[in-house]
Structures are given as C-alpha cells and as structure tokens.
Length: 142
Image (cartoon, rainbow, N blue to C red; front, side, top):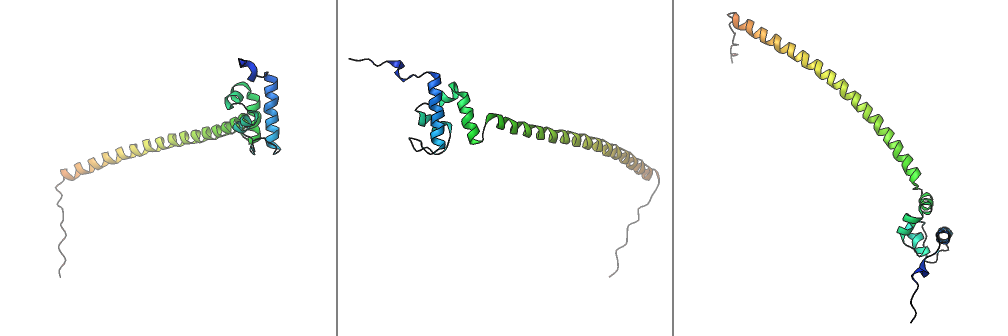
C-alpha cells in the first residue's frame, strides 16, 4: 500500500506566485482553462487551483495586483476615502460655525424677549394703577 505524501500538493512560494501570475495572464488574454473572463481574486484562485484565502493570506502583492486591475487597489480606495474625509471635515467645520452663529442669534433674541416681557409687565402695571375704563364697541345697527 502506498501512502500519499502530504507535501505533494505544496509548492515553493516562488512557483506558486508564478502560477498565480500566469493565471492572471491567461484570464486577461482569454485563455483561461476554466473559461474565466474577469480578473478577480476568486477567478484567479480557481484558475490556479488554490483557495482565495491562500492569495489573501500569503500573496498580498498578487491580491493587490488583481485589485489594481479591477480599479480597486487599496491605495486608490484609501485616497478616495481620504478625500471624502477631508470633504466631511470641511462640512463639519461649516456646520460648527453655523451652530455658533445660531447660538449667538438665539442669545440676542432671548435678550430682546426678556426686555419685551419686562416692558409688557410694566405697561400692564401702569394700566392697573390708572382707572382706565375700557370702551366696548357698540353693535352696529341693522
């Protein structure tokens, strides 16, 4: 009885990386053995006969090359997110400034309101002190 050597499926990293790059090349040129047409990590893994985890965990440069071919490189995505962050920070600064302006206006309106309330109470007190007779308008004749 022959026992299978467990190391028979293992290739040196250099050879495995060549296999992955060849798989990318075959897919790009329409020569894939398994009819893959789009360069994705999953497609390259299938074409090379490995798992996607192997590419992600042991060949990050190959994974990045695949993402670049898809237009999704981590560097490009990071740059886009950084630009979005800068834009959001600018909006946030504008909102904070607007909030401060609105707080100042609110304080001013509250102050004016207090003055008007005080004037109203003074006028009401003056009305009570005087013997003012309220005139009731007569009903118009028909």
